Structure formats: structure tokens, C-alpha cells
Amino acid sequence: MAMNGGAHSGQFGKRRHRRRPVMSEINVTPMVDVMLVLLIIFMVSAPLLTVGVPIDLPQTQAANLDQAREPLAISINVKGQVFLQNTEIKLEELVPKLKAITDARGGADERIYVRGDKNVDYGTIMRVMGRLSAAGFRRVGLVTEVEQGS
Image 1 (tube, rainbow, N blue to C red):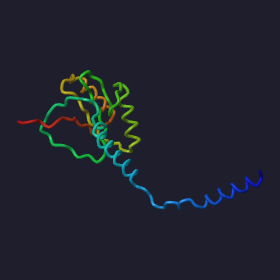
Image 2: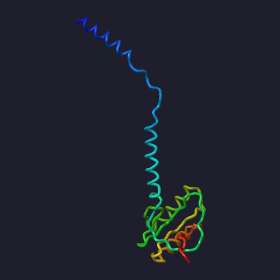
Image 3: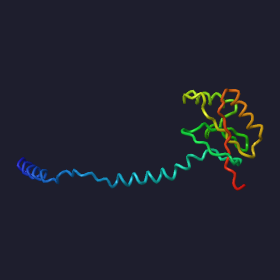
Image 4: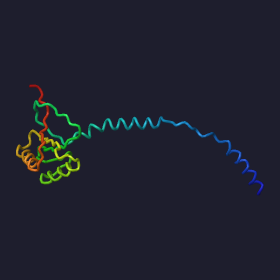
């Protein structure tokens, strides 16, 4: 029995040396496929991320402003709900949150845009603007759409 085991182990040893050599080329086709799929996903999802709070803005003939970084936006919808960027916030919490954000960004003269639905109560927008003014924010702008046909 000991001889049988030795004979078989010799055969296996010879087979072990007959392996194919290691392939040294990199197959990039799967990587390119994955990258193309990711590109398509980001192209489709990117416009959906910038929509924000749905508001029907009033129209004016004012020109667009150029801005290097993303501004702080306060939105007020038809129901009178106040949003900071895309998050609903209570009116009492608005100024402390804005101060914390502007301190973190390092800019005391941070530009703030107020987006109010054209059907919202004028008093609601003025309450927000009054709180911003009382808190010391001086660069506050109202956002509108470009007027169509005049």
C-alpha cells in the first residue's frame, strides 16, 4: 500500500508543473463597462438632485446673478412652510441655523436668497425678511423667474 501512495503522488507532482503560465495582461473591459454604467447613472440623477422645493416663482425682467459657490436659499411654499435649502425648518430656528452655517463657511457677508411662491401671503415673506435683517444679514436677495414675453 505504501508503494501505491508513492506512485500516485509522483504522478500528481508531474501534473502540478504543467500548469498554464500566469496571465500578465489586465482585462479592462469590465472596468470600462462599470464606468459607463456609473456615468449614465450620474447623468440621469444629477438634475434630480438640484430641483429643491417646488415653488411657482414670480416673473421679472431682472438679469441673472453670477455666483461662484452654492448660495444659501430660503424657500417659502404656498402653505407658508419655510425651508432652509431643502429641509423644512421652523421660523424660530431659522436665524440660529443660518448663523451656524455662515460661521462654518467663514463668511459674515454670506449671500442669502429668499424664494417665495407667487401665491404665498406677503406677510409670511416679510416675517422671514425681517428676521434676517434683524439678525444682521445684509446681503439678502429675492429670487424670481425671467418674465416671459412683454
